[in-house]
Length: 257
Image (cartoon, rainbow, N blue to C red):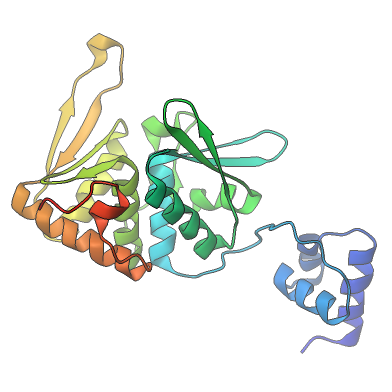
């Protein structure tokens, strides 16, 4: 129970122009606690959809977001912490789903910008989310070439979410599962998770230096194992509230396996 003096201090500092985050730091409480007592004292709180902490402690959602961002995410600082997830504009189910994942995990509303060549960008600004990915992912300035998990020791929920995120972004699964990336370490992360489920994925390198391109690391599986992987991904999707299966969310139509 907070003292009246502390609560009055929240109100005084906020009315002087301090942010809820700054007040929380000064008073050693969370920004949400500051907000709660401001509202109780009938102080109008500015709602800018600023994220101070995760809305959910779900490790599955954490892994799912990390996997989606590892595959299709970019972020940079330009008068704000800008984050984008790139999708095909025709993948309307997937776009809506990713927006829901971001909202369920962070309580963050996002917008979509549609560009030429069927490209859609899910866009949002957040310092907290910008820094959040570094909790789980390592990457250099060339994110696509270097991104990977900081460590492989995570809960099963996190790893399953991460695998689903990778497959929703850079994966392909109709009769056979394929995951392609120019990050060698990210391909090894995918191998590690699939092997934890007892699968025996194949891994090979497409040498492309003679074309001036980075080598491509490809993970794939047999038809029979791909069918089991499709079931697994469908089960993980169900845990997030999506019940139509992997083929539907990727826009493939009816399952072929």
